[in-house]
View (cartoon, rainbow, N blue to C red):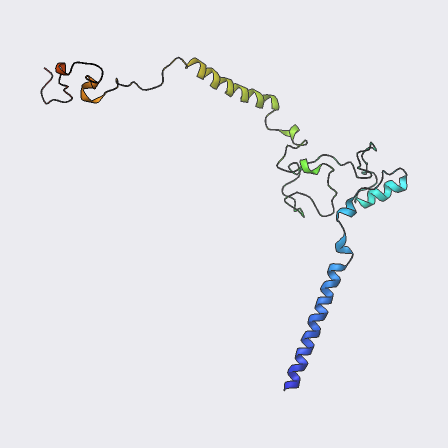
Length: 196
């Protein structure tokens, strides 16, 4: 019985070692090493049709759709010149691989993708605004001007409540203000007698 237990332990130990080796193969394998920064790093500007075809294939584009940025020394090399379509301008009902960015796996990103996210102004949606920029500016300055005009016209109106003259104790500080102590008149604050 004890030898059977030892045999089971040895078999389970071998299974765990083989599963670790399989996991190691999965993580070391070449397919999962794709789509890292070195894969998207632009190479030199394509000058021949073969280089253009290779660059189009590298970025997953058709040769007809591939157009690199001009070779003006900005360092973009063979990176494709993509249309500036922001995440806001893309269909929100598509089942995207990365829904927070509205893009699919392996899809090339725009060179200026940091300003094409949903929290920024998008160049493709500016033409489809609900209200034109002129109307927005007119409403903004109209409201601002209306508030300023109202404040100017009502600046002469006193908007604080009326108050009584300040009262002091000891008969309005008669003695403290240099009055004669013998000439102090009694102050009647409240009486039960009628006014008549």
